[in-house]
Image (tube, rainbow over all chains, first blue to last red; front, side, top):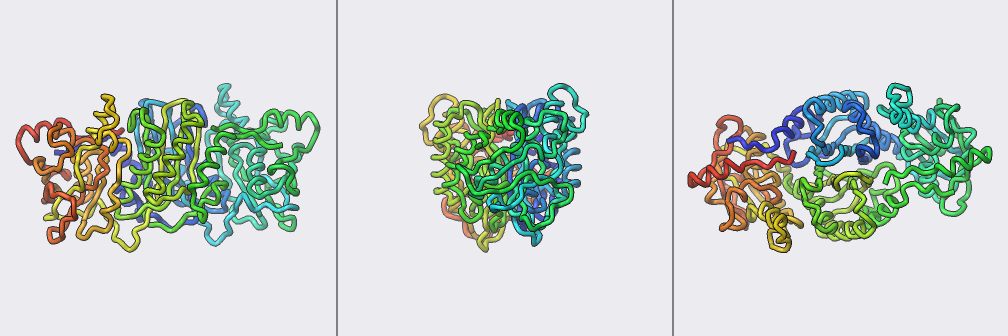
Length: 302
Length: 302
């Protein structure tokens, strides 16, 4: 007899095999995979109606699941190599959905040069819950830590800030094809910033610029200024406070030695100063900007 | 200002720090952890009302989350070392629940000699979803693969078979303190079987003995006999078919070279034979036993 256990799960795993590492995934048929060489490991979960709306295509969700984890790896100055996936799928994730997810995952794996190492798929009576665990390699680069900021360092951000929040707004109002909405659905982690000289502390902007800079400050035992008028807002004509505090940008916020060159496309937005209180971010700029940003600060994922 | 982002998540992470690896978890404050040395990696998800009932204590759930993953590591002949956790928590997981979960996790980490490496916690509008990713070390032992079974090998199981299914039955009928229910809530992976000589193929019994033996056969390109009358049933007076096919045992099913000694407490239940069809398990024993087992075979997690 052939056990009829979990045929649909095995079909899905069969499709994942084409994306798997032939040397370490062990054909996805064992209880565990062989651990490849690596330097960092991270894991992040996306929950339907918390981190995404449920209106995204499965291709978008597969991209975003990898991208948010790739962003965490990049924030450590590492290059992603392998992913494990935990996919908790409600009944609407039918074979068509799963084929779309596999398609998007394949595209994202190629885009980020990541191979699948293993995972677990299970059905769920609840919302779609997607986790990925990523491995990354430093390739001789120095690890970036949140705790590395020093007084006198410049506070810098890559790219623009606010696309995540604006994209969420667009998605919620049905404008699903704006540049911001596209960013919300398919964020692009900053692999191009790997190895920049002079970076002392780093985090990716996932909780919002103000909150993520505060993480760096708390970890480093310092405080920081943040000049709201110098932030490169994604849309200068839109709500600044929303953009400075919203999540899902997947840019990098980093501290830079004052003697180092500012990487291309990055902007200085503040300076690390001696600690005041519990690792605080002192907002600078027009009073109304400060007031609005304080009112919106933080991004409650939990 | 101090960003008020996700204070409750940070409190929970603060409590997890006491269980974390001081050398690699980076104080749980970075976007990723430093990857320690290791040989295998696995991940498994538990979903409320799919893999557990929701009547378990948070201490039980923390134990089970680690145990099912430890079992996967042990099935590879590796010793678990580190865990990453993805905790997707509905609103009923209040501070009391979380304190209980941390307590149970601490006990399980000590029991299994596992340190926390990182993770992600998030709220959810749906059921409780718990994932863990475990790392393990072979410590000079040879990796056990499902694909290692050879014709002529004996099929063996550790301990008794059926406690998972009987425990689930007990839990569902309100008998939450039977030995089987206790096993269902707090399974004990077979760390004591690490390093047994002569093991050629191995899997843990999580989907059910019949299904997990079929996994070994398919991976190895062989078939197997399974003598239902020789299975060491957890309760010989209870439903045999249920016990032979139910999941959640977290024993090992393994194939053993015929020249090797049977490890203490293990039982021979069949033999590897040349492939017949698609890696099949040929049930042996009284006709009514075979019929009942065929009717129940498999454990549909997906």
